[in-house]
Length: 448
Image (cartoon, rainbow, N blue to C red; front, side, top):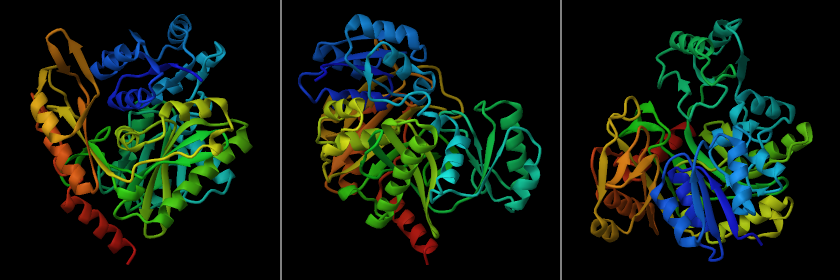
């Protein structure tokens, strides 16, 4: 059984992964990061491991450092790290990984590839779509959808590239203009997908996958929009919540199982059509509509912030799960347990985010207030300096609250946010009764 684990990445998601790994007492954590994450650095130190700073998208230096450290099992985490082939390079050096290869992670960084797989396998939940590498036929396709479309750059855009008519876009004309911008400015670098606009409530379902078996995690709802009431521009995610019993207030067991079956079919058709086995964490973004469940996208890693929700509830040692994933074909023999508690995550972000972040600034944490709040902090894009922790250009700190109910968890998360002072802000409405009731009512109206 491996004891030396390598984690590649340094966000709040990776802080949560590191914490979950270190719950197994024999784990020595090693981290390769692009910036100092104070939480991950402390876990490396206290577990008897080590850390290194460098380019996390450069496979060879990471693999060479892993070899020198005697790493036995690795988990390259962020999407761009997987797309850079870090998992592949580690495998070449005979270091086991619990993350997908570059070929398997294509289901995330090539949205056209995913849709084509779904068509080939006749997988349900696929919206009507068109894939364009030039403007030929683009306007006509948008017109054929009545202008009611979602425009998606095909490559990686940090979760911020999608624009939808009625939200970020005013009408079909703006959709055409944005689609052209995606192509001419090479946003994402892979072309553009035009999909029918779906109306409903989005939710995330993540699953551990060893290439054959998938084991699902609790459902989570993320909040991409920057401002209160789900308004404003898209972000990497302002916060998220999970409900007691692994469902959501607007999501029943049938919906959950339908979404999980779609993920299972995608993994199976990936294997059958391309002979590629997906080993790692599969993240499905779904929408519950009046016509059932649709798959918005599949990602090849934990969500951020959704990883923080589910890993806080995980009772089975994450290190043991990663062991089974890396061995391939053994996950179905494992029973993975989660707490039935609810969770709420709220992100503290720097002033000006997401449009224009302020100059890096010092923030302070009131330890007494934090302790009384019973919340936990996970460091995201921060810079640890001798004089303290500084904000950067993106999300700064994720604040987690747990409770028997969503309301209890939200109260703790909100109190935790107030323990941090400095030029940061957050969405206070995430996980509140008012916002959740609005979502439940939305689904009720959709389904008649």
